Length: 122
Image 1 (cartoon, one colour):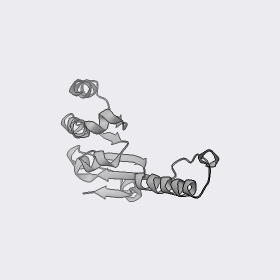
Image 2 (image 1 turned 180 degrees about the horizontal axis):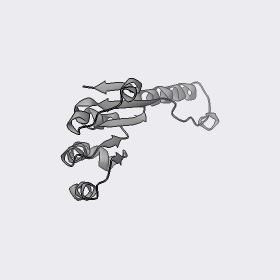
Image 3 (image 1 turned 120 degrees about the vertical axis):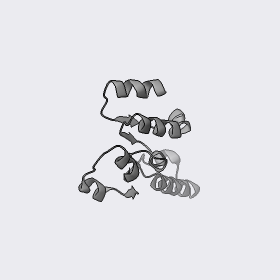
Image 4 (image 1 turned 45 degrees about the vertical axis):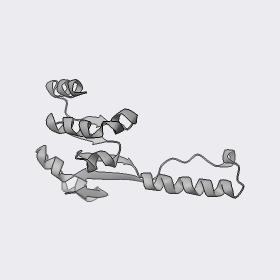
C-alpha cells in the first residue's frame, strides 16, 4: 500500500479518493497515515476516516440509511410484501472536514466550503 502512495506522490498526483470496502475499512488508519506522510489531500467515502485524521469525506448519512431500513422492516412486519416496496436512493449526504489535517497539508479552505460542511472537526 505504501508503494501506491509513494508512486502517487512521485507522479505529483493532486489528490486521492478512497472508496469504502472491507480492505480500506480494515486499513483506514494506515491509509490516513500514508496520505498524511506523503502530503496527499484525500477525500473519503466514510466519515470514520476523517475522524481518524483524514482530510474530508462526502458520503451518505449512515444513520439516515438505518432509519429508512427500519421503516422497511416495520412495513414488512405489518404485512407488506418486500417485492412491493420501492427501491430508494440515499437522499442525505454529509460533508465532514478535518481542519487540523487541512492545516497540516498547508491548505487554506474557502470559507464557503466550511460553511457548507455538516461538520468541521477542529
